[in-house]
Image 1 (spheres, rainbow, N blue to C red):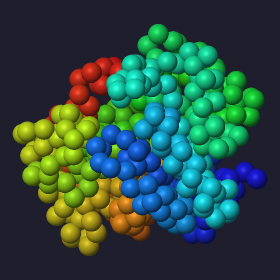
Image 2: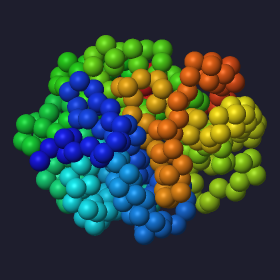
Image 3: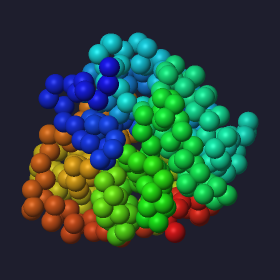
Length: 345
């Protein structure tokens, strides 16, 4: 049975592009349940959060095979196996691949060669315990492999039934056009939020021209604009935010001042800062599906409340005045990671 035909009652859905599946209007980004925030993983709470998301009507679960070196895919496998059958059938898996890791957690670049694509998908299918992945995408473009070869290899997996749809991640307009000329592309996964609006100039018009959807990650900028982050917060050892320019020194103070201005608007509407930020992304178009990185059920419940928020023209104008495009201080990644982003070239 096609899971896209089984939406939960009353939960809004959105298309992932002209060629992709229909997804819940909000997706669940699962990365933080396994990696990069430097905290011990609460496996029981993670699985309970995925179950709560599925019960609420979320269908899209986003992961990467390198999140915890396979831990995240195994976690999703367990959550789906123990979920009610109807929710399990609705679930859509979105998987990023290509990152090379070392046993010391080091990064070794990306491999988008056809042989690597086939290798990566075989391991993901095993860890997820499934015979197909709904949306498959390389996490970052391999500079040594033309995007046509990487996308072409995924297209072969589509024809073989191992993958249903092809996605992209963090690529610029030229690469999007080359990929779309190779095979149908469902969606582009890319950072998009009040604090990260770079896609509006060229990338967003390009995907709309080509009928490609957006799955927006970082909608709360790793908690920075959630309303819960404070300047005196001590990050756990290994938390990658400690190396993010937006979380450092004067940049952090500047960015939290922007959040305070957003808080005033939220309080006037009787909602939270996080709900305001998520609702803003939802308001940018029916072709955009925000991914929320909730690791706990309380944060999930707060995020889902954004679906009940309506931002009228006055609200949107007030948000634009208090949080205009380009207002953030600091890049979204350290320099080395920024250099890997085809979307920033």
